[in-house]
Image 1 (cartoon, rainbow, N blue to C red):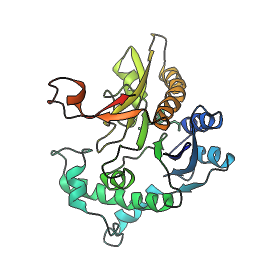
Image 2 (cartoon, helix red, strand yellow):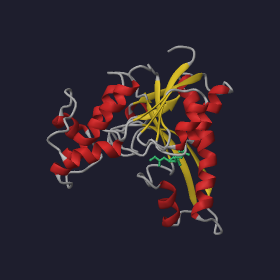
Image 3 (tube, rainbow, N blue to C red):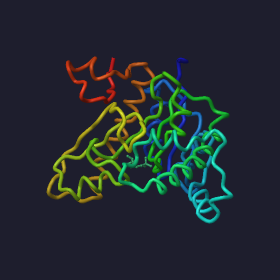
Image 4 (tube, protein in one colour):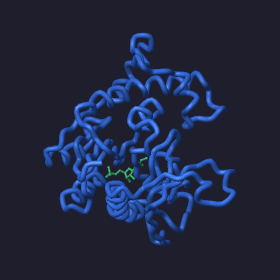
Length: 263
Ligand code: GAR
């Protein structure tokens, strides 16, 4: 890996995590450089943050892709290298109880948008792809084209809850409404499931009686801005190793999960 890692980023919204990572690169807390920022949403304020740093940006309008697919499914073609059955068998975003026709249509539609992302990313070689508030699930079609065969995973995500609790789109909201007394955030590698990949780092905060959803989000975001750069720094230093459970826990074969060891 080069001295400075090249980081690509995908965002959907405000981009405060992106900002924290850009700041950490600029102040050399991360030996890295952001080489592109992509979004599924042309109005994401985070795009302006990137442009202000002269970082190349692009948009793949997921909503437009979904609309065309819905209106004329026969006319919007999946990418030539898309193998629906392979993706269907690999994915764990859905279970056997979900309608296979709906799942297949979801996966096809996503792959069309993801092929757009991959095309936009082509001019910018990168070592690590970070999801910084990117609110779309990625399918195995995309993941397999970013992760190098036989190599370590290289897509990272930050999630607003202490995984494996509260995966999904509203981590702080779910934590707060459940009445948890502790909330937190998690950075993990992406796998084929929803927020289910190997955990790299977590930070927690107390939820007090007087807290509101707003104050919980505020506490959480402040920790995210510390945690994400710390985890990316470990990646840049080559200190994240994926290990099989049997190497870490004697007789733990029951759990087939990979875990991250920090060297
Ligand atoms: C952050 O809280 C991040 O953890 C969350 O979106 C917010 C983005 O804020 N991500 C997810 O929920 C991913 N499922 P930002 O755009 O200001 O960084």
